[in-house]
Every structure is written in C-alpha cells, then in structure tokens.
Image (cartoon, rainbow, N blue to C red; front, side, top):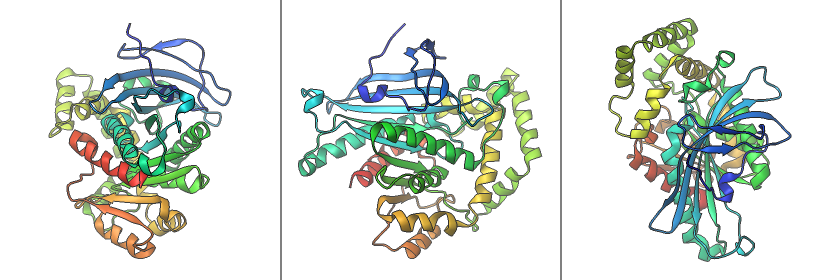
Length: 391
C-alpha cells in the first residue's frame, strides 16, 4: 500500500482534534494515515489523500490531500463529519529549518453552500502555488523567504460528497449559525498553532469568514477576501425569491429528498439523476464530486441551511456594515458581473456606505459564481486572491 511523505506544514493537525493511535485506510484505499492525539476534543479520523509530491517547473512541490474528520465535540449530542481539503506548496531550498526566515503562510478557505470542501481541491492547489509565487515576487522588499504555503478549505458540518460518512446517528442538518460556530472553532484551532492566518470565503462562505474576522483577535487574521459574496438577500432577484420560498417548505424539501433517495436505489434512475446534475460541467472534479454528493441528506442539508441563510441575511446592514467599518482595511471583495448572489448594486451600496478609500473591491466580468467547476477559472481567481491577500 502506497505511503506519502508530507512536508512539515502539511502534517500539522488542528489542535482540537484527537483520536486513538491506530491507522485508518481511506475509502479509496490510497494511503495509510496515522491518527493523532490531542487533549481538547475526541475525534475519529478517516483520511484520503488526493495526490502528493507534484513537481512544478518553477521549483515548487505541491501536495494535495483530502481529510475526512468525524467530529465528536464536547458540546454536541451527536457525531458529525466534515471535510478539510489541504494543499501545500513548498519551495525547494538548501537552507536548514533554523536558517529559514519564516515558517510559512496559512490560508483558510470557507466554501459556499452546499459547503463541500472537495469541490475546492483544484482552487486550493492553485491558491497555494499562487501565494508562494506572489510571496517570491515580494521577497526583495520584505526580506522574508517563506518555505511553504498551506491552504485549507474547511467544509461545513454534514456537507460532503462521501455518503459513507453519514450514519443513522448523524442524519441531521445544521443552521447557518451552527456552521459559523463550527468554522470559527476550526480557524481558532489553526491560529493557535500557526499564530495568524489569511481567510478566503466564497458566496455564503464570505459571510462566515467575516464572522470569524469579527470574533477573532485583530492580530489573528491578516487579511480576508470574499469571492462573489452572499452577504444579504437580493430583493431584486426573482430567483432568490423563489428559492427562499421553496427551501422554507420543509415538508416539501423532505419529501423531494426522500424521492431522490428512493430513485437512487435503481441503477438506471441513479444514472439519470447523475446526468441531470452534471449537465454542462466540463471539470472532471466537479462531475465526480457531484455524482457522489447527489443524495437524500445532501439535498436536505443544502436546502434547510439555505432557509436559515435567507432568514438571517434580511438585515444586511446589521450583519455586514458594522464588521466592515471595524475591519475595512483587512477585508476585500471580488465581484462578478451577472451574479444574483453578489449583485453589483449591493457592491455599490457597500462602497457608498464604507467609502472607496477604505474598502478594496475588484470586479471582473469574466468571473463566474461557480468558478470551482472550471479549472481555468479556479486558477485565475486564485491568482487574484494571492495578489489581494499579500498586497
């Protein structure tokens, strides 16, 4: 069975996780991963690494792996799983650890709903490389040469593509507030180990990341980028009005999800669902994840969490403006042209409320909300993020 040697930065685990000293085989059977012990939380761990040691022409080594963690929090009555996708870009150097100027960069990403971290694997890889290259270009000015960049995308509780992680004990859904608390706990655990981090949030993930900025100490978060941010309900969008009504009908959501689960018991119907769900997708990663994600509890999790999003984000000034006024110099946004989740009229309202001098906003017509479903879009946005985070 193949084993992997990871860079030091990639081997670190969040401090609130713990497990027994046994090893687990990933679902894909690709690697044996030693479990780790901590004193703050009990945790059962399952891990699967996507790839390791990819050499690039510019001399960086990129390692990407997917970890699936089964969390048993002290304040939770039930166990639940979430994914962490970790990408590490490491610069080749002849220096020893003691001779290097800095231990590395940590960037944590928060996905949009449906909150599946695995969708962001290619983006995490591209962002780790882009941050390393951007830092390389700036090194003559700040005289700091970092050995590595680690990018981690932390998925939402209960939102993952691997259906085997769902058990009879964990068939529940989580509200927006519960997901914000979950992400905040993860960010805090990583900052305790790395001293500080950068944040990237996509869609509703931008709102969740802003919550982390608000709750963390000033020195804990260096900078945050929100990609096509869903910060408040778009009252001008008929699509959002319909979706808000639909996901509020919880009985309907449950019935539709049950029908979906029943249909997947039949091979022909399952293939029809997969074809419908992946129609128009060109990204192999997106197709693979969507086929595994499309099941009963995935639909319930996405829809009912979405219901709490629409209800919470009605009063946008209460949830956005106060945070931006307090942290405008460290928060920036990227908007696309035609995106009802992060429409340009809301961008203009923010710019008017906060002021152009304080708030950095980039608008690019070529960006799409579902950028993770296109490898080129992921790479382009990763490069944009790297420039905004490090400048």
